[in-house]
Length: 252
Image (cartoon, rainbow, N blue to C red; front, side):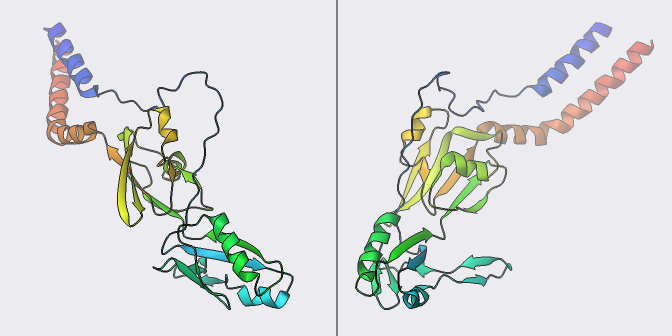
């Protein structure tokens, strides 16, 4: 009788501790020894509603003051944000004296060249520096810190975005990460397998402004949650009953 009760107790503990195996390793098909390979970062192109910080310098100090519009102003959260030029629905920004300049669809370097060419008519040897102020990505789903993240600069890949969000939870599906992107006025969605090293060759591995990354939960989470909420009280009661029986038997 003692053996039977002990067997039941051990079986109950083992049954409640079982869980499906998950592959929690990124790039699990990566060879142990691989040659170094430089990943080609995709250049970000300027889109409608982008906020651009435009710094213009020339040999004429008066002209520099005229074009200096990037002042810092306090926000509602008492933080400071940089004001700049908003790209209109027509894909243009409006510069003092110069007027409208179309920048939509250009890379940052191309935009700097375009503005420099326009400024040549008014100032001597202009030097233009453009930064994308509102480069943001959103990471949601099975991550530890889902949120919107403002990126310094204009270059971030999927792994870096997940790092900002505190990485995936153990329930995150690493083989089915969804990237949602607005492209040419249309919403494009792509699923990526982070267990496969070939994902680094995908055009969606390097994120663009306003991309949304969604980490889907593993089915085991819903299964475990449903099972735990319904079965755990019964399991706890069963374990308590078994413990009482064991104590009673051992006392005999």
